[in-house]
Length: 218
Length: 266
Image 1 (cartoon, rainbow over the protein chains, first blue to last red):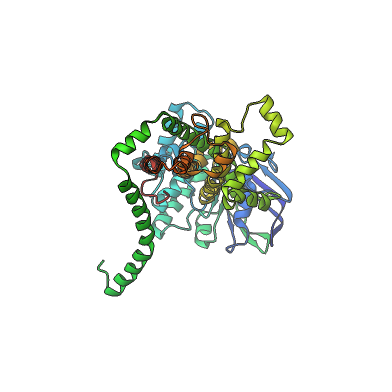
Image 2 (image 1 turned 90 degrees about the vertical axis):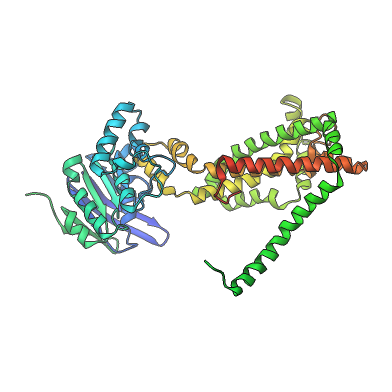
């Protein structure tokens, strides 16, 4: 569950005032808006990567407004994937587990499971450079999910993909909340992506959030 | 792709302009080579005084390179990734050793260690002036500035996004730095180290002032060249110069083969 209450942020000329949104547990929410309207900023604030001026961030019922990114226990997929280029694909996927000191066989098992689901088993031992856009995004997704976080934040993960790859990724993402028991907040400016994936659809407009589609089951 | 005659003229002009500098370097080395003979070279290098100078140079340059990286990594990172009060002042201060004549730094070091705190340090910690540590400090005062600049550019070129992702994956700041940022900065680190080492090799002015050039104590190769020249031992000066050129080339080649091949950094 993601609860953002009256979030205020200011950076130079840019500012967000009293932004609030709520995503229920296990739902797939889309945050839409034009380029530069502050979607990524909100995502980064939820992830703990930006300081906020005021407001409250509650993740899975626990107040995390001033927690470090690590304490928030969430997965984050940035727009460019930001893979660790000096590591292999396997090490990228297992990073969150190895940093927590998980045993090697547990890491291998989880990485193999993710690799099979994301269809990247054939490139596991390759270094994470020179990969296609689709491969990069699938690995970034797997890396974010490896530690089974209850919340996943994705920043325009499909924006740089060609149409067939994007369609395959949409299929993959559609089953994500059920498969990984995760609450998703996905930033995009694509209406098509929003319609295909979103239980909830929010639109950020002039610093305020409007609910376009309210998707909790009755 | 076949080049048109107009393109050839264009590239020829560039080659002549740029190549003149390469030709000058090659001409100087060749002139040095023709001035001496292998016998002269070997006999000069066999002198105990010069052997000591070679040993001290290699050790002091290596220690200086390590110390330069020791400060360049944190300072380069801070300058590249953070905004802090007084950043412009710090940035300007770090440029001082680059723009000042090195001899001024040597003089300043001499004065610094003559002040009461500097004197206290020498009395109770260890002696610096005209001792081996002064050679390292003189080299470090110049080389570290170049290493800091290199590391700053290196960190600026690494996307902060990977570090942020590492934080969300459970890393502390330190873990993200060591596990994600530093491996990506490896090549820049090697470049900064090489630059600091090479710069130390050529340092002369501050060493003369701050360390003196006492044979078998603080004499390094750059001062050996000067001392040999001063007593009209031109063959000795050239022998040492050629040796310095050779070790500089060896260091550059080794660095490239260790990790910078094809990157165009070195």
